[in-house]
Image (cartoon, rainbow, N blue to C red; front, side):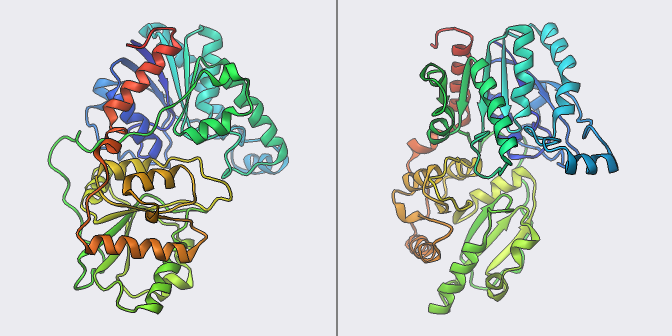
Length: 420
């Protein structure tokens, strides 16, 4: 099977999309040509598979940036309602990448087209390639598009995004989503025969495929004497994905029981927006209870996950059941550690409860009292030496070779082949 894949955020850039899609393509039993961008705002720190581009053909097209530059760009953002927003700022990249993509497809004899969004420009580029080549096409959505509650748009932006999404879903031979809730949300507005072409493909973990020894871990910051348990959040915190519910719950618990955290430290590994650390609750916490390690290499982040006593998921609050499956939650499960969730009801909460064997492992971000109950239950489990992860059958559901095999089966369906 010869595949031409489009994934703007791909190795060697270190982003969640690059990690997840790179992992699936690495394990895919196929010849893959990968078209990707080169965004300078992200580092080339991807280090899980040193031989990635020995196995995957690379076609890197750097982004030319915005259509207008400097002052003209700022004016256009104010005066042109759809400028640099529909569906993202990568319109110039799509136009630059089309020619090289068609040339590589012809030279490689690619038999199928696979696009991965975010960003959704990947799908629009694939749509144009589909029109020109007629290749079977699978479109993979890591997040919803026009229905994404965390991408507020004007009515005009929403209308245009919805129209673009409809063109993609109509033209694609298969459509994949990372959770059943996302599939149901997106496909509810389309005809039943379109929905029949949709399926769920979850994120994957891979804790085993590394070259060389595990990285040496940097010492923890401001460690306190007597700490026996470390609970870590791994990944970025920004916008509505705020650690404030944790800070508020910790402060409340300390008011009621001052020594409750004498043997516990919480650690954030990754970027935390400075404005999220300006809260009174955070500033009032004892020194060393919450530590900020900052960004580390990807391999080191996985080692830190495996060395944690528990791992913390923090999601944005939501009035409706959340459709999102965070990739780091799947990696937490791959690390075989207990998982605690500050997350609204929905996909994440369901999976955390399944992994923990109890709904007590989750609390909604806007219910601080529920967060305190979740923390108490988690701490009791740690003190009781119940520090292992959940059922192995749950972890194996997300193993990278299994997910990649399911991706190959979906590509085969897009090509009209039977699935063995």
